[in-house]
Length: 211
Image (cartoon, rainbow, N blue to C red; front, side):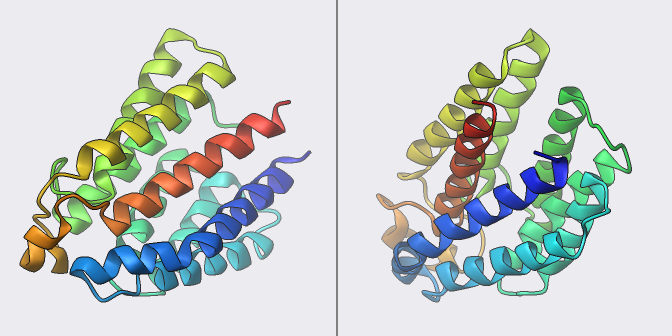
């Protein structure tokens, strides 16, 4: 499988999972939002799939920059956040045709920083950063320790899941949800839930591709 084929497979897997969970994400968003988070995520994932097909000769860094523009174009509150995350990751990877594990870890850290700056959020604010940050920390630690792919993917997925569970009882401090903070306590934040969904399906798909 070529790198482009793998990326296309990952994008399609993410899109398929988000489409299946769209209604669930929308229901979560109805608790303290507009009720359209799932629909917006589907639009964003579809736009990224189109960008993938239009970038057959692009490096991974260039593809991520195109994906950033595609996702940001769907608007809402989540589009710019994922757009910033993808753009920062793409800028960090640059035009390297074969990024190292260390480069991917650095790109993930840059993606988190993009979300922090664009959303003016911190961990504990009950946003997608509560998923991305621990997953990134697990990736960095796994790379630094020389973990094999299976162990690395398990660590990243596990950290993302722990972040999601840990965020359930938080009070939202940013976005529309903060105006209805009490309603959200005891429920998953929709942005956090969809971020976990993306990380989980990426880890599972990468694990299967290595098998």
